[in-house]
Image (cartoon, rainbow, N blue to C red; front, top):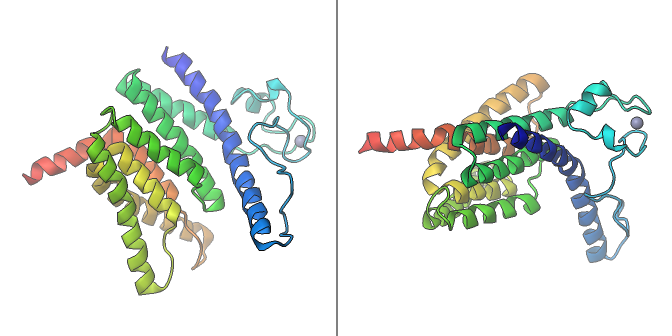
Length: 275
Ligand SMILES: [Zn+2]
């Protein structure tokens, strides 16, 4: 059973690749089209008909040759094709098999650790969202509303059945999660005149607060801040530049995966040692 679920998760990982690749382009085309309509002028790149959608057939990004079904088998196709397009020998990005393996590995771990139940199913859905958000934020510095807001709703609705926490704790988690980063953003902006966070970060934090309740935010805010600093240090070593953009979404997302595994126990151990 665990093997079948893992194979399904790897196939879902393959779909996540499609979302990661195409969603930013779909949104970009929508923004340009809206801008064109509002301003009443022709905006560059504003097509009358969208060129990208999530359900078109997969094609090589380089030579645009449509791919056959057997070119689309997760992980295996990458190995058989030795990481190259069969037609133009363009190198296929390592991101594709990495996302597929990561999806399979995370779901395998969740099902093995927490058992095959509704709790694990919901946690797997959370992981899929967090994988997509992480890669899109790394590549484009955005956390799209079409992903963060449904994630928030799923958390609130799941907890109306007391899956991770009580409905009241879930509601307060969403509000305090959003508020914590919102306050940080404005204090930082007033002091430095710079914007250190994006509104997508607030919404992702609100979503995690909705999933795990307000008690989880102590762990999630602190650990994601530490991860964010480590990530920034690592990037500054690699890039050797003084000023560059650092996405905060990946640090929040990673903490969201860590919380149900280690954060829950740590938080309760901390609070019980206080009393
Ligand atoms: Zn090609």
